[in-house]
Image: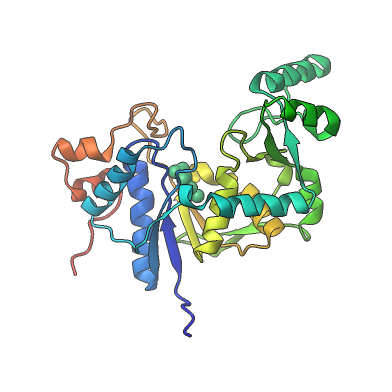
Length: 299
Ligand code: GLU
């Protein structure tokens, strides 16, 4: 048996909309890094959110990437076909005693946060995305009450007990951030940054963070190149890797492609899709220019 020691890169879009220029930058950076390293380039479809994922967007991802001149290994992993792998990871977290069930609704949480803010006269801590941290209500809610609510069919999520998780993780955790210039940097993980983050959503039984670390490990991913908007998510993912006994890839978080007003491109704000740009006559070379990449060298 030969062990493939080549570097493994991946582009992992969620098919919740058409790809835009920010996706093109991520995909091309991964593809070209794999080429330079003589490594492998994988495409992964992150479609755990069945309510938002659509087949036409999956087909759009393949079309757009092919048009950009990228090629990837087959078969493409589709997360929706591997839910059992993520359930296995959740079972392991449960066995480790670092997760707990949560029956709070959005409005329960908003109310608890408002009460805390009223009582303290100061703003309750926000996560890096600006949302208030979960106030921990279900961590101390009697199990009998949680059981009764679940029996009533309310459904529940699972949350990471971040303080317990931090204790379980061996020593001070870091992830390795690499970029094209400078030496790799060890970035300290602060488990308190996201608080008791959800590891299994009530509606789908897993979460982006769990699915992504399980898949990166199962697919032998060695390098994760993705947008700066996921920089802080890496701390949660690194902690989960530690709890699940999974290897940690190297990370590089690239600049975001901004619109004319300096805002991050987003599907919901109607950022121009690659598909629309193509229909309007743009070429792959135009796309490279628009995202600040040099022309592709001709071989
Ligand atoms: N699926 C995620 C997204 O489309 C990216 C996941 C990742 O690169 O880690 O935002």
